[in-house]
Length: 73
Image (spheres, rainbow, N blue to C red):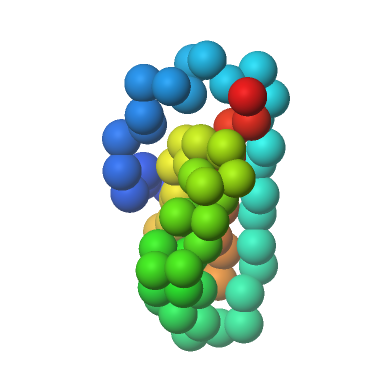
């Protein structure tokens, strides 16, 4: 699986005792729409709730796959 990281992990990542891996298989052609929503609306709410967004990943071999990780304190 060829998955580049969109942004470097935050230093606080190592301090998160619980890490959640979330994987989504999307309808063809919809990944960029989800990423726009994720970046524009979801990250801030997650951080406001005390979660750390560790990173988001795009599988270059599977354009219908989106993966992200978050940490909980």
